[in-house]
Length: 373
Ligand SMILES: Cc1cc2nc3c(=O)[nH]c(=O)nc-3n(C[C@H](O)[C@H](O)[C@H](O)COP(=O)(O)OP(=O)(O)OC[C@H]3O[C@@H](n4cnc5c(N)ncnc54)[C@H](O)[C@@H]3O)c2cc1C
Image (cartoon, rainbow, N blue to C red):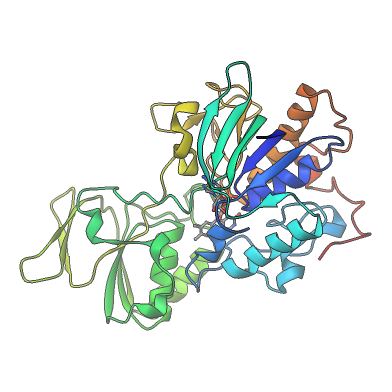
């Protein structure tokens, strides 16, 4: 039985970035358990998918690369591109983890978590059992797609299960969903020469939509969407609330909208309808308090309100109107969580940087020396 102060579950950007913050606490015994490999979710992205948040080496001027997991590195420098692919970003994460000798154990899926009688947790993993005083859950959402957004969704292909849009060789497809993954699917199919019908509830890209990219389409996706429209192979149908997909007697599928409209489609419709609201946190659903919208309730320090000692980091974290679903957003919580753990364990937290100032604007002007990428 191994015993640690802190275990992080998941080695995506949340887990790796969190581990880099914990490394700054002298004397802390911590480890990262990863069910697959570092950056596994990014390795599963469709081959054509690119980061929508641009990477740029702005670090020496006090504004860290938007996609970096620490203040000194830059995916833009590591990959040499502004919009990394999934494989390029996974390679960056592995490079950073190895360069810092982070204690990451790969192929060590956490199978179950039990609370210990006084405090702490027992973790049963693919490689044995261990105990930890604190647990940080960083399992993301990409590997937890919502496969049942409406009846008949089992006839559809979810975005998260696509490896390569070149494998979609029929002349036309229907995509359901008008946010990032639906638009990415439509744009890549059009780029592959297909005709696409995109069914959306509302435009997430009109000028009146919210500016927060967690609620409206990013500039990168808008630009690609307009280019796809210009080919005339993309048809967008608005105000569509899909309620069912059913197989047709003569083959193909019928897509039903709430207002009675329907569309027949020979190919399985493609779902760009999103991921489970709790993402990978549903693996330990009993340890969280869930609100009526199906979101996890957290303290201001991102600790579970139901299970003291359990923290959440990553895209599921929400506080009122603040949605931390991008790396540049959720990385701002690394220092906060590390700080509260150091305090609980009476360890020195002086090397930690907390708050937005750690990442800029202009809060990190010392980093010209020793850039890691
Ligand atoms: C198409 C697409 C494009 C995106 N573009 C951007 C972008 O441009 N910029 C941006 O900031 N964000 C973007 N995002 C969102 C971003 O990818 C996620 O917010 C980010 O991956 C979350 O990081 P994470 O570390 O929380 O999760 P993940 O990267 O999913 O990592 C979670 C890890 O946990 C592991 N795991 C899961 N369960 C267990 C278990 N039981 N035991 C052990 N390990 C486990 C998984 O194998 C995985 O490696 C995009 C998302 C998608 C789907």
